[in-house]
Length: 292
Image (cartoon, rainbow, N blue to C red; front, side, top):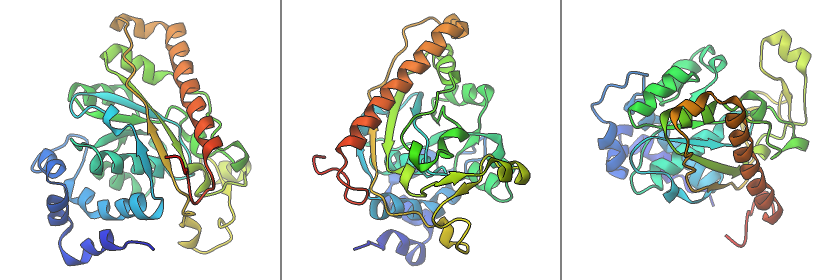
């Protein structure tokens, strides 16, 4: 049975009061602080009950290895991307906000395309997301922030159902960032997101005509009216957070293209192996893993 308690907080008390009561460590970390990139604690508090409902009650996300994310200091959280909509980032943020002993926000690097969408761009800034640029990432890391990114980019979320959990080649920019900033990389493998919106096929000409990165065809889109086509399947998720990888190279090695590409490929293969294992051991889409 679905637990609606999280959503009731939107009625019974103000979102900020609810966040302060439930998660005082997270609240006090960011309250009364001005963020140069637009993060707004009030907006976070308004949406947190909804995404926590998705995390705990709808997708019933299981998280393994949350202790591998540092409670302070900068780090890069790197994972596979999926699901047509970037819900995987939201679920990872909920894990960090509600399951970590020292809860923190994750600043996801988002492609510019999303920031040009009406209303969505401003909302993304206020919930902590930033434009994907090395300059912005460098500033965040110097402020000891956690940065989340998906090196597959748009190609990851646009995968068709037959290609689910087949990781697209990683863009190596995250390795360059890690070496130059002397910060650890934390690989993350997520199973569940690829099936919440089964993408039967994509229509590239339609996407080009509408100036979209892709145009998916799912069992619900474009056949059903809004918001039905945006309702995801209640697939059970598993997020496996690996131990941090500390790259023992001097900062100048960030300009070694061959080295950077090799490290990016190795991390991609590590995540792919984990995805293969989790996928093989999963019982069903909706019951998950009996041995976890």
